[in-house]
Length: 173
Length: 309
View: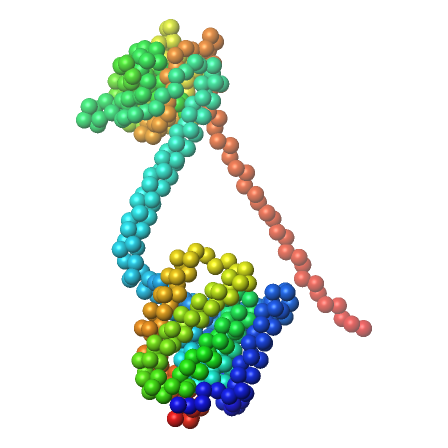
């Protein structure tokens, strides 16, 4: 684990979070749109070791919990993103066939987004959150997954470059 | 195949999970720190959100609108229809308000004089090609109207019922060139004949060559025998100018009607006159001049400095 590098990555997460909250939240996309920050975080985790993935998930989840629009309990997104961040990094890190295929990365990030949303909804249901109709939930989750599939290929090179700048791509080799 | 994670990473994973569960517990227990942190984050984010909103709000709905173009059009059409309907309602309401105002003033006038009236609504104006000043009202024989009944509104005389139909009546307006009415100058016994001119002014000819008239004098209907076609006491107009013709036997004056014949909405037909002549009680009071406030300011004398000892 490299604490210094994890700390260095925090301003990048914060910047993406600010972009998401201030700019992307102004744009109303059909079928729920996508979360830039969630895609960025899971892509980052996918490029990292499981340890870094869990820490990045923790930080990203905490930021999402503190977002003004977040309706859940503080810690709910944190819990979800620790699990998915660690999970996606765990799956990607050990399998070289997955690591060398950008397409699989895109699919994995999209699945990661869907799983994160499902886990969030599940956790919310357990914690007594008012979640709305199941149709609306399904529409939002599937819509997010499809949007993520469309957006991630454009976002991935940027994430990869930023990740490389911080971690000097040593973890990818 | 790489080593996917050792015990250390699993331990870290568990610690982070426990930490997040700890946060959830604290939040569910209502610990102020958590809400304070969220409120602090909102405070930090608010300026960014405001700035971005000013820039991006015009394009915020662009993508959604593109996808829902058909739905947006239908919504736009529906809103346009609603808008048109609301506009019509508003116009109707304004018209109704104006009619209520006219009706109220008419009832006030009739009530003050003790006239028994039948209210009516003007449903059409006379055609200009007929060269006569008439209106059609929505009551007729069904309300026991008969020919030669006086028609009034809140301001005064409108005209006289000329033709009665089963459900409507034709009213000859006081402004019609063929209209003649015997009038009396209020607060005096001078009488004359008022003739319509097809405009908002009429001509008054005094009957007595010794009588004189002044600008601003109010004229009221003198009344007819059997109160037909005119009931007494109805305000007609006021003198607006006087012409002193050397060849005329008596004075001739131009009179402006109290009633605007082009804006008739609700009128009343007098079906029964009061037993006593109301005389001048219906004459509108002249407007009171508004006193002008004059303020005198006296400048304070400039103090002169006294030499110090």
